[in-house]
Length: 424
Ligand SMILES: [Zn+2]
Ligand SMILES: [Zn+2]
Image 1 (cartoon, rainbow, N blue to C red):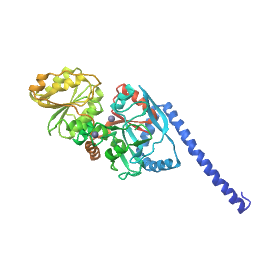
Image 2: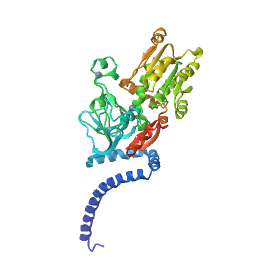
Image 3: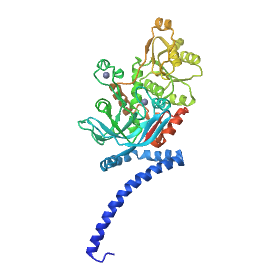
Image 4: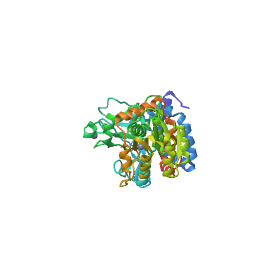
């Protein structure tokens, strides 16, 4: 007990100073302990993390709300580093402490809400690089949505607190192709990576052309589907679909499933050609009228033709596997006057053999849609926001950033997962 008023004041002052001092240490300690804890939790088992994330998901909105303030505070207090996945080479991704990015003129820094795994990232993980998009050592991941924490000088369309989806690229707007509305073929397409991290910097050109505000009712992890969905919508629309057309979609991976869902939503009759058991149910759920589970290519072609009247063939065949054999298969499934879309990109240097007579005398249109345009990206987000697109069906798992390696290892073993939302 203080002996006098003067003592009490004296004591009070000491206490306040102590508290401040202890408090300061605590933040540092928590960060340090917190980091160890996540590693411990991972050691204890993936189930635990899954549960934690599941519980966490219910309060994601709360966390975001609270988090937004916290992030601002943290940034203000001067947090210098963050956790981020760094690709070093083949199957070598490490979670490292890297500098928190800062927004230069025209740029944004987002706090990542969710980053989604993607077939392209899996390919990059396996190969250790991507000729056009990523050269190691580099930040990694490209499908994301998050919250603006910092808007650079001159940015007027976005402010801290805005929930946004940032696309992985933006066209220049000035080259031969951009001027003709073929921005997906831009000579100077600017790519951005680094979604598997706590924060990501968005370059000025992407801010100007390909950052979209996410409506309040759309979860950030759903909004993060905008990029792959834009590719799917682009591929479908490029195939000249008419309502009521029969569309065969070859491939039951994330993009094959997305294309078939988009086609079904557009009123087409969809025949899904898939390989694995787990894909059959997913294809049905997403609107395929028929599912052909192919064992051999010859049988798949026969089965698909049998489903059309007089074995005529489908109006549109979209290949979403990315192997030459499937490209050739697609050409054999389509009717006279039909359209084939070679949507899946094959390995560099591969070639296909096509029956020239069949293509000419059956007047077959061949397309090979690549990537997306700013206009298509807006359409994709609108489709997600409409609620008609079953976004939830495409996100089959959640994992913490620290689990990224394990997630990719699992995806390499061809699991039934479609996309995993990585939450930093
Ligand atoms: Zn992707
Ligand atoms: Zn361009």
